[in-house]
Structures are given as structure tokens and as C-alpha cells.
Image (tube, rainbow, N blue to C red):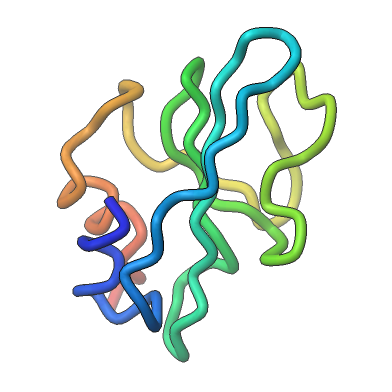
Length: 96
């Protein structure tokens, strides 16, 4: 995923995902989108819901987010927990 987002120009390096193993045995990962034209501050993957945007680069993974994260700047991207990277890039691509 990181490589696909880098090729889209949304990250300045081919970062690895920041993976966390939560206390409730849930796995989440985040990738900060630090490119000049990034469509969101970051993207987050949650093993329950798949990929979504995050409202913050500093804290893309919300603490104690047992229910799915919601609010301004949060948008679920594509169905399924493991969509092809190209599908996530397409879902993030701003309408021209």
C-alpha cells in the first residue's frame, strides 16, 4: 500500500505502515500522507473495517476507538479489509 500511495505522489518516501497491536487484540496501521497534494492527512487500516482517511497527521489512529472512527475528515474508502492498493488510490483520488 505504501508504494502505491508514494507512486500517486501522496507520500515523500515509500514509508512503511505504522502498525499497532491494540489491547483488544485488534490490529491497526497508519500511513501519513505528507505529499504536497495528498487528499487526506493520513490513511488508517483497521482489521475490522479496512481503509479510511484520518483527520490528523499527528494522531491518525484514535485512542480507544472501539466503534469505527467517524467525524470531519474521516471517510471509509472501499469495501473489504484487504482491497487492492489501486482501489484505495482510486477511492482517494479527488474528482477532477
